[in-house]
Amino acid sequence: MVMSTAWQVVEYPDGEVLGEQFALTEMELPDVADGHVLVRNTWTSVDPGLRLRLRPSAPSGYFAAFPLRRPMDGILTVGVIEQSRAEGFPVGSCVWHSYGWRSHAVVDPGKAAMNGLASLRVLDLKRAPAQAYLGPLGGMGLTAYAGLHVIDALDGAGTLWVSAAAGAVGSLVCQIAKFSGLRVVASAGTDEKVAWLRNDIGVDAAFNWRAGPLEESLRAVAPEGLDFYFDNVGGTHLEAALEAMNNNGRVSLCGSISDYEREAVGPRNLFLATSKNLTLRGFRGSAHAPLLDIMQERLAPWLADGRLAYRESIYEGLESAPAALADMMAGRTVGKTMIRI
Ligand SMILES: NC(=O)c1ccc[n+]([C@@H]2O[C@H](COP(=O)([O-])OP(=O)(O)OC[C@H]3O[C@@H](n4cnc5c(N)ncnc54)[C@H](OP(=O)(O)O)[C@@H]3O)[C@@H](O)[C@H]2O)c1
Image (cartoon, rainbow, N blue to C red; front, top):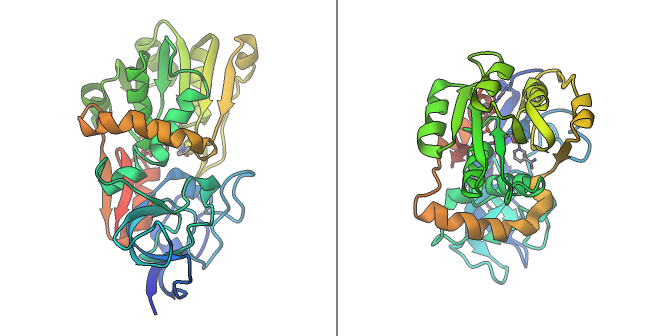
């Protein structure tokens, strides 16, 4: 019999995520049935999207809410196969799957997970280290790539603003856009993140969104106006972008993290989308799973030869997961936030 240590949600947060809203439990796993594998998890992901599921029901169309006092399923996770009764998934292979925030899982390779993105998949460690599949070669890379793709920015010309640009998705968006020939301006919430964006990520200009009014900061870095906006934040950031957009501009609505722990504000100037002939395009990375291979082909060589700057905020041990989520939501992490189990 194999036991798994697993986090459960005890109580949904009203506002900020706190450690006491979760409990670390021991659960007995089922025997490894024919066609299934047992995975020992080594890395699991910490994403803003988890916060959207820490409530009785998640936003319509999104991944399901985490039920109380049940293991938290539907989190992209990397591990090593310890027992296998499934062809094509040998013992010792590094894989990803969706049974996260736990130490072990029995996985059915035939079961589609997270819109098919997180179905059991063998990972190529010659291409990149295992945890890169939670970052640039996984859902983060796919989201960055798909979000630029859906607004036709990959072959575009002009100025792009990326918000939450020092985060997992944002830092990749900045670089893919730069390599595609766009002028990139970026914002983040600390001077240290802004320096990283300027010096290592290689954006054309960057500012600290906490340091002054967004409209003024945007005018300073993009006096020519914005042709594209990659929105990770929503609320007042989206409102400022609508003001700064040029006619026929295109906005990729990736996320709205400023709303996840508090009541939504704005945008109050949505009519500008009409008056300026803007395109606002919401999207889910997982809805573009067919772009995964194309994205990996493009990003893996940049990662291997060091052209792609990449940072990880690694928390040690499964027990650190709630604290990692709280830190990420509060802007205390840089790059991809993850747990080494
Ligand atoms: N559409 C999709 O399929 C998809 C997939 C993955 C992620 N997302 C979305 O993409 C966004 C970024 O996700 P990520 O995984 O890359 O997270 P992340 O950027 O690594 O971490 C979140 C960052 O958001 C910023 N933030 C938090 N509260 C904020 C606020 N009130 N105003 C401005 N910035 C705030 C903080 O950075 P600062 O210190 O810089 O403020 C924080 O570090 C999120 O909105 C997420 O939901 C969407």
